[in-house]
Structures are given as structure tokens and as C-alpha cells.
Length: 558
Ligand code: GLA
Image (cartoon, rainbow, N blue to C red; front, side, top):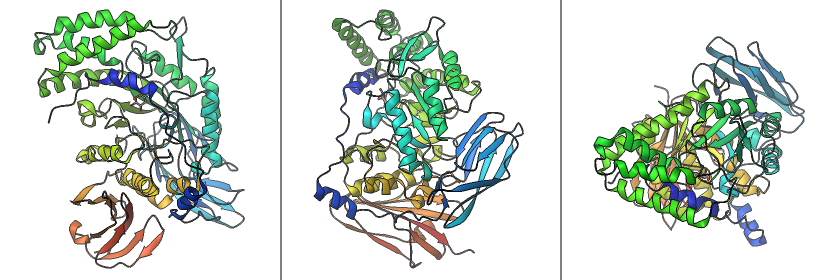
């Protein structure tokens, strides 16, 4: 197989992104509405209190800390926490823990309690103060799938508000991530500023934090982002400091226009591997550089056309380089580019989750964690089309060995609720992302959730598979024609097993625990329907076309 190239077609992507249309919204046709209601599988959330979400949170010593205890149940609710280390405090009326983490590394077990008029509940949450963030896959929302580059401060605030009012935050969704198109120009001292649609980034961060939610942002190692806004090239430390001062908790760092700089670096550092081309690559970069701008002045069409020509010329040159040679060059350049920002974030004074976005090229899973990354995209951009999502899923095979607490493969954001996937396909995406321990970043408009979409996104037993503290990514155990079985080890010696039907007709799929060399089962739980199934020797589902089922298995203790 030809090695995909990080230096190759990414600017083509940059051209496409801003033009891509947002997905059509969910239909309001009564027949469609009824059909969608009938497809709801998740039982209604009880009114009694229930504490949801992760059971383990990572933080570094002496860093600002914010955690909204995800709790469902009738309001008003009251919370209490035992075991809170000094420096952290709980707001008993909102369930928000805030403050500064202790200086001493170690695991602090917090005993969380929530009560309302109907009852009370408790749960333990381990706060692990150490070096690792994102001990379970990040859960939250990002604007790009639903809104592309058409975003503003007020739109993001409305989404953050909706994350709370819809109840999504009560199930563990916490990051509110602003993607590309917030960036303005640099001030005289080089400080990056929001553009006219984002006049006050710290105030936006404060609004998100006021809900106990987390503030995510976007930039690029290149001069320009994919959408043609200003990136962080040459300003990495200054930008990381600015982000930290705005209260940023998450950075998505998107390769895009770094392609031409990468070409020049390749020429400078690896001239011996590029004997015929080093000079051409350098002169291309020299011509290209001055044409980039920060949107302060419009770019004449002939200039844009020339930039595209240069990109195409570079692509042609690099595609002639043998795969492994190109991979070695790419890896060298990409690790450096990402490490610069990784270090800057680490010394920024805040805990900032670092998401690498370079589309799975240069085998990022092999080095993403080494450069400070907590998650990395493994493929190109997702769209709400079944076949395309399947293409993405196929590319996750074999990547499970690179994932674990603090290091996640990211097959891109969810498309559930974006109007083109059928109910079965939406259940399939959620099941697949949960069994893969993929980040759960919602990609839909949170102000327009219909009951089906909400039910799929808020099934706590399904989410618990994703958030399981072992942090293992599931893998394909068996594939027979259209039937696929994925398995994922869970804490407490349990297993999750997902049944997928990739075909066009209903399919009976059977799983035999002997396939995992498991002894007899003491419990089998249907996680979508919250029902115990008979712990019979084999488990069979008739799975709908493009559909999925998910169970948790508890083996008999030896
Ligand atoms: C790239 C990324 C997307 C999004 C856009 C923004 O295409 O892969 O997820 O961030 O850039 O321009």
C-alpha cells in the first residue's frame, strides 16, 4: 500500500473546507418524526438522582480545575463531596467543583453524593493528580460538522447553554470546542486576537466555565488554518500563553497550510533524500510565503491560483518519493511541529488537552503521545454519510494497541443528528465510537435536538463503555460477510461486545463467549435497552441493516 503523505494534498482540503455545505437539518415531516420516535431504544432517564460520566479524572499538580458532576434526576438537586483535597471546593447547588489541584501527586478518591426530593445516590470519582490528562476519551461538542466556518461568539454561547439545558452535560459532555474561524489578527506585540465575530475570547471562556463546562479552541502549526485564518506558526509559545490566559482547556491543532513550510523543511533537513528536488522545494516556499496573509487584505484571484499551482507542483514532486523515505521525512517534520506546541501547552500554566489534527498521516498514532498529544485524528474529515463513516471505521483496524488513558485515536466527530443518517446508522455510529473508545465530540446543533438524537447521545450504559476506566480501545474480533463483532475489555473483568450489520438486510449474528476464551457468564446486559438478558451460553441478535447492538458480559468468577 502506498504510504499516505502528510506533505501532499492537504491544501486541497483547505480549499474545500470553507466551501463545504453544512448538513441538512432533521426533517419536521410528521411521518418522519413518528418513525424516529418509534426508533428510540434508550429508556427514559429516571427522575431519581444518578451520577453519570467518567469515574476517573486526570489533572496536573497546582493547576486550575473545574468539574461539573454529571447528574441526572429531577431538579432541584443538591450535591456533597467527601475527600475533596484542599484548594478545591464544591458548589452544592450546581454540583460544580472548582479551584486548584493539590501540589502533591497521587489519587484522591472523591465520594460524590447527589440528592433530590425523590432520593439520593453516590459514586466515587478518582482525581488522579499526576502527569496525564484525558484519562478517558474527551466528551463534548465541536461546531465544525454542523456550522463549518459560520460561527460567532453568540452561536457558541447558545450551544454551551444548550449543552446544559438539553441535559447533555448531565451525561458527561463537557468540552465546548470552537473550531476554525474565530481567529483575527495579531496585535502589535504579536498577541493573537479573536476576529469581529469573537470580540472577547476570555469572556467567552468565562461564560462556558460558568456552566462548569470546558473551553476548547483551534489553531494550526502553519501560517494559515484550513479555513484561511491565522495559525500559530512562529508564535506557538505566545499563543499557548494567550490561550491559557483566556481559560482554554483544549486545543485542536490542525496541520493544513503547514504543507509548504514542511516542504521547505524537508528540503533543508533531508536534502540527501531529495537530491533532485531540494532547490525547487525551497524556491516554491520562497515564492509562496509572501502570498499568505491574515485576511487583512483580500487576495487577488490570480494570487490564489498561483498558490494552488505551487501546492500541486509540490504534490507532484513529493509523490515521486518512495513511500518509506517520504514517511521518514514526514514523521521528522510533523513530530517537531507538534512537539513545539505540545511543550508550549505544557508550560502554559493550565491543563490543556492537546488534539492533533493531521488526518492520520505519518502514522500519527505511533508518535502522537510522545509529542504531548492526548488524541489524534486517524482519518480525513467525517461527513454524515454511511459509506464514508464506514470508510473511517475500516481505517481504525489495528490501531487499538496505540490507545490508552491519555492517548486516544480520534476517528473524528459524531454526525448523529445531522439529518442524513437513519436511526439505525446513528445507533451504529454511537456504538462504534463507544467500543473504539473514541472521543465523543458531538457534531450537531445542540439547540435542535429531537428525542431520538437525544436518546442516542445520552444512553449512560452505552457511554460507560466509552468512558470505562481501563481505557482500552475495542477491536474487530470477527468479520463474516456483513457481520462484524467488536470486543472491548472493561474494568471488573467484564467485556463489551458490539454486533454490527454492515449489510442491507437484517442479519442474525451470534457471539460465543468461547471465542474470547471466557468461562460461563453470570450476567449479560443489553446496554441500549438497559435490560438483563439470559446468561445463556451464546448471545444472538437479529441486527437491523446498518445497525448495531451492544452488550456487556460478566463472566462467572473463577
Ligand atoms: C480541517 C479539519 C476539520 C476542521 C476544518 C476547519 O478540515 O480536519 O475537522 O477543523 O479543517 O477548517
